[in-house]
Length: 94
Image 1 (cartoon, rainbow, N blue to C red):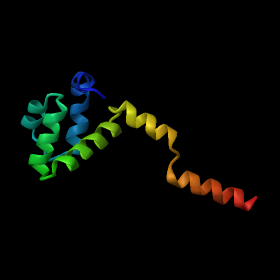
Image 2: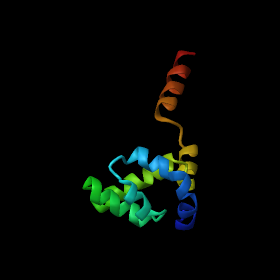
Image 3: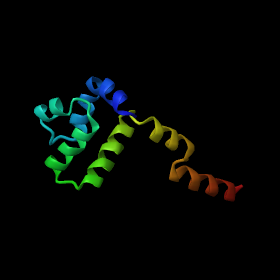
Image 4: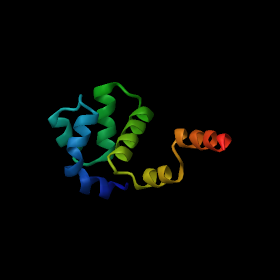
């Protein structure tokens, strides 16, 4: 998701970010205002994450919130790990 999309969806995503990152205050949410870099900065500040870890956590949250089209596309092309092993077990039984 690019920065314009993130800002455009921010009002819809506020509740989700509050659930995922409970240490963020209402003021933090207002300061972030749909800006990915500010979200990452606040995650570093409130959780003590290093920059790369804060970026990863933000990206994971965005993907789970339906905000990352690229991550969604990647997940669609990759079967869940348990599904692949079940398929192999089932073919071995036949």
